[in-house]
Image 1 (cartoon, rainbow, N blue to C red):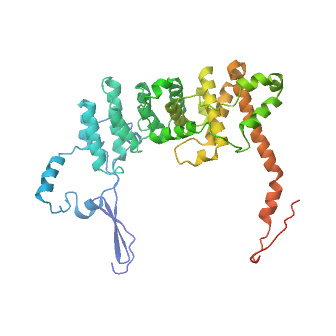
Image 2 (image 1 turned 90 degrees about the vertical axis):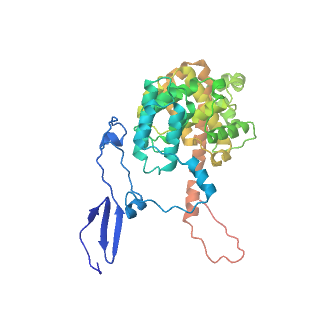
Image 3 (image 1 turned 45 degrees about the vertical axis):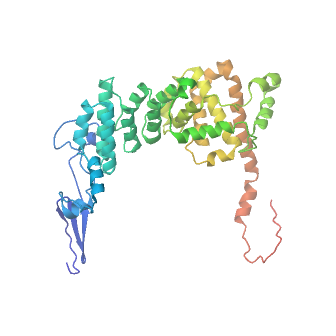
Amino acid sequence: MAGKLYGQLWSYSSKLFIPHGKALSVIPFACPRSSLASALGKLKQVKSEETKPPTLVPSWNTILHGEKAVPPKPVETRKTRTTRKTQLSPSLTIDQVQDLIKTAPPEGVQKEVERLLSRQDLQDLQLSLGQLALAVVSRSLADPAFYSSSTLTQLVHTQCLSHSVCPDLLPLALEKKDYFLCQLCLQFFPDIPEAMTCACLKAFISLPDADAEKLSLEPNSVSFMEMLISNEHAQTGLQNGFSPTSCEEDRTDTIVGRQTKAKERENTSPQQMCPLGLHKAALINEVLQTAYSETFLLPHLKDFSSDHVVLFLQYLEFLYLRYSTDSLIQTHGCRSPSLNQIMDWVCMLLDAHFTVLVMTPVAKGLLLNLQCFVRSQVRLFSELGKIEGSLQELKNMKIKKDTGEYSIEIIELY
């Protein structure tokens, strides 16, 4: 070992030994038998040694002292010994928890899963959590009397699951009308198909406001809507080239506006009142932030009824109006959709239902307002284009370093 170079590695007891110079590195290494089906959580449950979920990274205590090593116990007083006696009980392995899921009541399943998550590192359980979720979902589908919402919520909160690992989880939550679990899935699943995204959106829009207000949702999303609705009557100014006043002026410039000026001002003013309830809007905000492909989403959006499309567009109009007139909304720190996401959904809805909306009398004022938004943005970019050359000249100017304590400089812009 004295300063020599070795071109060889040694593997022993799931460890790699790498000599280099005067040092020896020991790195945990495990290469268990696996398959693509097991990685995606789609492997059928078979009780055998090969299908047991492996530990991804061995602990350093195991590496240094072996499998049966026990860390030294601290000195305990009689009082602490008696209290720990009541706390310690035989803990179940992952296979035992999976067997328990098949027969135990929801409360027992929740208790054992909670203990399993509390005593082991989530990185070691990453593959096993998908199998646990599959077991809970499979029993819920087979036995209508069994449904453990709290267990599934705990598993989703670990952020180790995805839709591809447990594809029946989100449909089950929609079937059971467990909208809090739906909200968590939309937050933490990065691979939700567009069909499921539209199914969630349709369920949320169809949900009566009275029933939605009884739901217990993620506090951060509800806080954002409370802030948004509580400030909807506040005095607003010009932001991003838009204000309600400019929208009124733009609308009267159109042919339709000149013909029915008084009536349009009464019936087609920008949506300054939220058309949805607090909790219902919080659920729809999760859909707005979900990843999607426009190509695959548009066919599913065309299945929406005209009433749902108009209501959804009215809510998007309300969001756009609040975002455009209050710059503090996007700096609050709460989980919320961005302005770009709002506009993307407006464009997709218009692409999917434009012909229907043109023929719908209720949507007439809504389309005029959306046209107003577009015109305000075009005007803003036109004005920015006029001063682009001047701004570029300022950027290219050489700044004098020695200006003294006080100086007056004249800049000529052409």
